[in-house]
Length: 387
Ligand code: SF4
Image 1 (cartoon, rainbow, N blue to C red):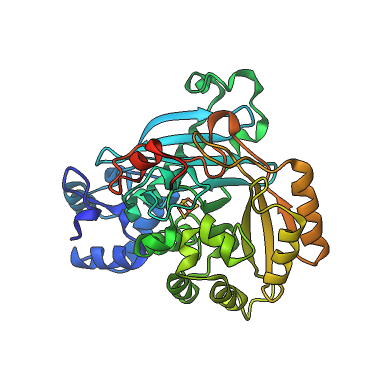
Image 2: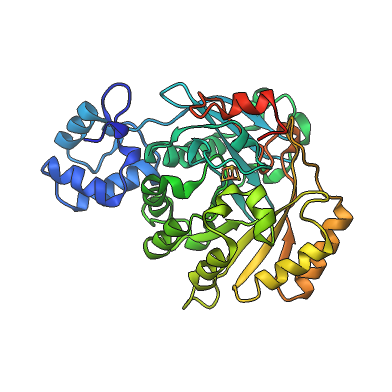
């Protein structure tokens, strides 16, 4: 059995098994295929971690599972709740690294923003996570564990738990208690660099007997890893977002260095076809607004030209500053002018509402706490202008 599935007690963490892996695991124990659905429902739908409570499993199977398996979630190091109801958690992993996760409640939905890696190897220039360096991929159990843990915390949430968050006190809005309706892979990491753990985790998220989220509501956000995007298109029906941030190669080579390997013409060709045959589905392009860098009317017109053949929408993200960054956010009036140009050109364009900024939970601000194997963080702290 793969060591990544095992927890520190050497038991197999069943959160790391998707439907087919669960079926194989049970078959190896001599169990019939119908047990797969039962166990998936207990673990993911009912969130029961004590096998003795799984009452429709045979006594013998419950005992076997207790002996060899476990359901182990990441530990919560701390939880903060912003005045707008946004939750942010620092999660401690078994190897001592920690990652961040954010829940954003809105009137009609609750979005969980989860991480796919400990840090990120890609180093987009405007991104706080990238500046922290990279440690490792998350296991599938650690990815699904984020969704399970957040679901559990939000359902347990009671007003008396204000003590967790001194900032929250009396101003908590009612939407704080909303359930998770959407999951976005926009936390730490490039999810397509952890394909083999992210895609099975997404399939469980969309499995009716597990979390039952719609394919329209599980979104993978990539900076444009073309070979993995083609594989994703074939293997997963999840929604796709692309971190674009620039309308031409010269600028994108600076902001998103991966662009040097997979330039815009190739990226647009993949995006144009990504949802072909699905008239209602479009790619979302994320575009961070950086003052004086990518936010002029000229850039907006260039963006329109770039996206003319792609069924898409555009999401403008006001830049969230972090220590030592060289960038500042575009003024809101410039963001609105940019929006109007792209929208008038026929592409639905929204401006992302900044959430959780009093607890550094906004987009691009997730950092965690981990051993950086790349040494990038040390170089960045020494000379921020150079990298
Ligand atoms: S924007 Fe995404 S891909 Fe780029 S460095 Fe940050 S986490 Fe990594």
